[in-house]
Structure formats: structure tokens, C-alpha cells
Length: 123
Image 1 (cartoon, rainbow, N blue to C red):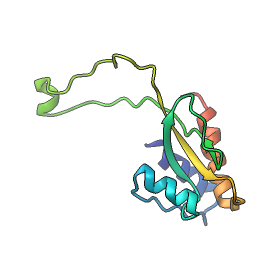
Image 2 (image 1 turned 90 degrees about the vertical axis):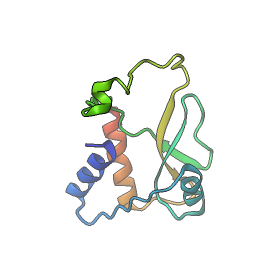
Image 3 (image 1 turned 135 degrees about the vertical axis):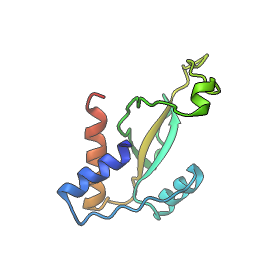
């Protein structure tokens, strides 16, 4: 189960009235939505070591290494190859960001707290 779904399910178990709307948007649209107040929270990737923008608060969501199998012709024919990256020093870190300027509603604080707690748990 993807980490975001697990976090939303856990949050809803303790607060059944919580409403989460998932929006298919690209990073610039998410950033604009956060800045303009259209989104309460948004997943925004950035390079490891970079600071979160001063007007935002960021929390790293849970990180997992999913195992998967490729079945079918592509997997059997060798069309898909798995190999380590040549240079894996530049790491993209997904963060769950929110705007600092506004006080977060209780449901947003609770959802963010679940993300933060799950991010600290061992994979």
C-alpha cells in the first residue's frame, strides 16, 4: 500500500470526519496552491540538503523500498533491466509542505503528525 494511502487511512481511523482530497497536479501547481492558500498540504520534492522555502514548513513522508516483480513478456524477455544509478549522491527528498503564514486547521495538523510519526518509524 502506498505510504500516502496508509497515512490517510490511519488518520481517518482516529478522525472519521477528516476529508482528504487528492489532486493530480504538477510541482509548480502544488507550490502555487500552497502559496495562494488553495491547498493545505502538498507533496513537494527537493534535493537533499536544500532548505525548505522560508514561507513553508516541510515534513518528510514515510520512506519505503517497495519490492516488486515484473511479470509478462517484458520481464521474461529482459526488456527491463535493474541496475544501480551511476551517481546516487543527488537524492530527491519528497516533503509534505504547508504554508507557515496560516495557522493549520486541526485536521491538517493531525494528518501531518501521522506523516511525521510514520516517517520516523523503521521501514
